[in-house]
Image (cartoon, rainbow, N blue to C red; front, top):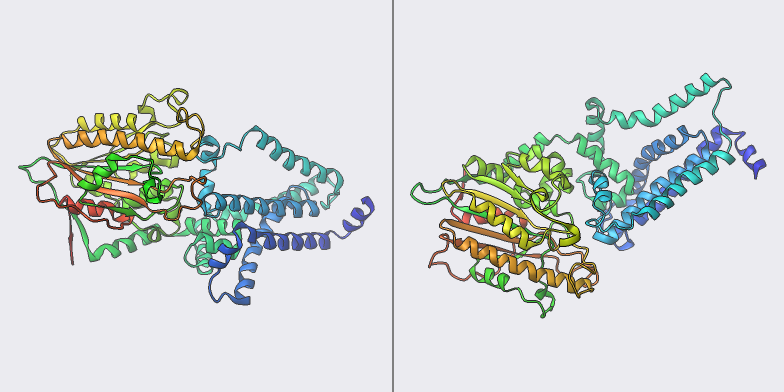
Length: 537
């Protein structure tokens, strides 16, 4: 083996080229496993043809070459560079496939921004397997295999003197790293982003994963995210709204100002839609009878990524309008400040308050929400929550008490907008969360009933206020309850727009179910409340 290795390394250029060709071939062949065959067929662009396939393969080569060069630069060992490059891409492909299997979306560039949160909040990401055993295995593989290559594969680093060797090491490290660094420089980023934009077209995670594989797709979308002119995107969205200029109407000076309270219920779905007849949700039934509008809400994402539904409701913007920001809009929240409803309400004289019983840094809400027009925030640090005593999340009963405390401190001289994002229904639904129940479905159903009871207490309190009150209740997405359905046959959740207190009138008639999209919820609510009107040009 040593003889063969020595003979191979006598031809360093040929060996390096052959190793790169091998690595590129393996990467292209294994990239397809990021998605199941059925998904690949569904998301293969029509009319792609042999030329399209060749073009997409060629587009991957620069990225593969940079990763290969990085491994080569730190070792000057072609076989190690090939093994490292292949492992790197295959690991990304495996992560993408695991993510797809779990929540039916391949890896996207914005997931990189969530890496720290995945390790910090393992339970909420269902990532408890990322424990000490995982790290031991990972380190043994990375450093153990690397050490074996360093021992048994000879280096082809040119030069005899130490300063000569250092020169070549520095040169190759710069070749591997400078292209990535240059992407953050405008004169480089803009033309590269334009080129990638022409190649990729409309950013679609599954389509790009089929065309370019996981890692290259992630890089291309990241380049687009860096290079897109958000001012242009926002201007285009504002142009789209010119057909109906949004104006908010201040309340009559002779009447008390309204309270608009939006309750986003984590993972809420009325399981009676799916034949579960053992659950009792009397408050939900009551909301349906009282609602001026109710029905099923289309979901941005099934089983996760609450922030996507949350932003759609708050902004009134469709995900397609957001370009590459759609997967994680809070990363660049400041660009949407003037478009979102909380800002518009604040400018119209409303107070704005965001309440969420979880870590304020999660999903960057501590930075995003003030940029999106919220004057005040009540987060987990304002709750007396002990996970060992109270369970992993703040209950809806405790959240209801906090919400009542907040609204009771507000005056009716100005409009009030309160957005509540609950956590109680979030998985995993593991033994111990509900005494005496070990089945995930049973745990979920019991927590739903507890949440329904808390919601009833909130409705009673709101209904007793001496001011117009509008309650919007909806589920952000279907639960990730694989033991019940994988996927849910209908992932739409439930929503209700309900007039309470002095907003109720004797003329209000029973309403019929109506399908709605999250981005239309607040517009519909403000119209029902006579706070918003459309003025046509």
